[in-house]
Every structure is written in C-alpha cells, then in structure tokens.
Image (cartoon, helix red, strand yellow):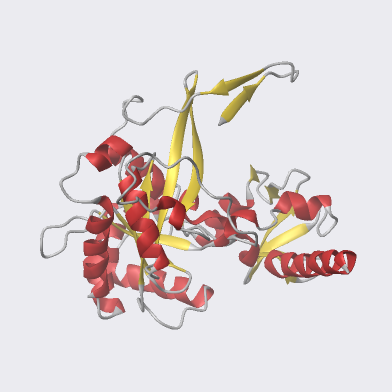
Length: 338
C-alpha cells in the first residue's frame, strides 16, 4: 500500500490502487513507458539495452520488447496491461512468451540478430540515438553499438540462453502458478508488477518483482483446493537483488560520503559529485539519480549502477565497496552470535 503523507506529517491517507484501463491507458502506452524507462525492468543491479520492438516471427507472432543483457543473453519482455487482459486471452500469457523466446533461440549469430532485430529498431527510433550518423548505414551503426555494449560489459558469448520477463499491472492466480512452476524447473522467467495509483492528476507506479522467489509452492494452484490461498509464506532469509544495500545505506554507514567524486567506469572524464540524498550532481550542473546519469553516459537502457560507478577517493567501484561493507557487516554479526 502507498500512503500520501501531509507536509507536516500530521495526516496519512492510503492511496488505493487502480488499473491502467481505468486510467485510459492502452497496452501500447505501457509498452512505450517500459521501452523508454527500462531501468524499471532491470533495476540498478542489471545492465540492459533495448534492441527490438514488435518483432514478427515466421509464424506471425509479434513480440513486445527485446533487450540484450550484460551477459549477452537476449531478454524477451512481454507486456499485458491488466489482469483482465491476461484472463481473457485465448492463449496463456506465459505460453505466448515461451513461444516467442523459442524464436529468439533460433538466432544463430550476431549478424542475423542485427539485420532482423536491432537494425530495424535503430531505424525506427533513430532520433533517440544521439551519435547516429547523418549518412546512415543502420546495420553498421547497430553492429558498432552492440560491440561497444559487449566490450564494456565483458561479454564473451552471444545469445547462449534466453530470458523472459513478464510485465503487467497485476496477475491472475493461474499465471503466477504456471510461472512459479517454470521457475522451480529452472526456466529463466520472471513476473514484474507495475501497480498504478492515482494521486490527483499524477500516476504513481509501485514496481515489484513478484517471481521468482525462494519458495514457489505458495503460488501453485491446488487441484483439490478451489479456494483462494489464505496467504503466502514468508520468504527465506538471505540476500536478493531486492534487499542488497542501496546508496543511502552506504552513505549512512560512512562507506561513501557526501561530495565524493564518482566517474563512469572506463570513462574517467565523465564525473559527478555524490550528494547526501544519493543523487549526483553532474559536471553540467544537473541533479540526477545515478542510474539516469550512467544511462546518459553509456547510452544504454538500464545500467548496473554499482558496477559502473567508480569511487574516485578509493579507485574502487561502488560494487566492490558494497561487497566489502557486506563482508564486514556479516563478520560482525557472526562474532556477536558466538
């Protein structure tokens, strides 16, 4: 639940969730939102570059979005507006995505991928690529863009496996049951939810990855029991991407400090100053989140923030500083429990 809090903290009103249909939004609106803000999909622990949109396979199936990740894998992002859209489909949401992912698995090499998927995407959205040449050879530009992405992310192999990310504002029980079973059987598929709330003329989105989890049985639909599940088990303890320390925790514990200088990995001239609230002040004078700053520097759709922000006072990435902080914290906790 999201709450609206008054300026003097004297009043707290719950905001009730709505859905995209009630907000007058179509599935294509949701798709465009995710395409332009892929850090919603990848969060700050993953690098993604959107490389395809509405790609048609030989059977006539049409994907929503395709990305490449920092391991060189193709990521299929399938989108449904609301739970109602999922339930009323003739074909199951997750099965549709599996069929599309299978068509991505058929791509044999980078050239095939560039000609069939990435170059058409670049051509369609050329105005969004600031370094796109005027005498454009789209395929050549797309090839250089992909190779730069691979070089920066130390990618050694292309499309060795495919991933599936489902995105909707809400899910029905049967879809979650099927995806939980697929996850537990080692298919790389996840469900993300973007639950909308309306606050006056603003729309707030609560983003949550609801699958995969540590324990899938809570999502299985029992054959014998037709009643809705009474609740979900508490997740197993341990670190996940969702509960890794964020920049505010590193600031609060003195791992990094306000006014420390950061630079983008491999680009020492691209610097920014860390602020007390975890944002950065760029050399152009803009106040941005680290994710937005690094997206602008590298031109990717989402960036592994901690891996690509170098802390100049120590010469280490925030990823390495965080790892040291976590090891120290775990050692202290172990010593206290003895």
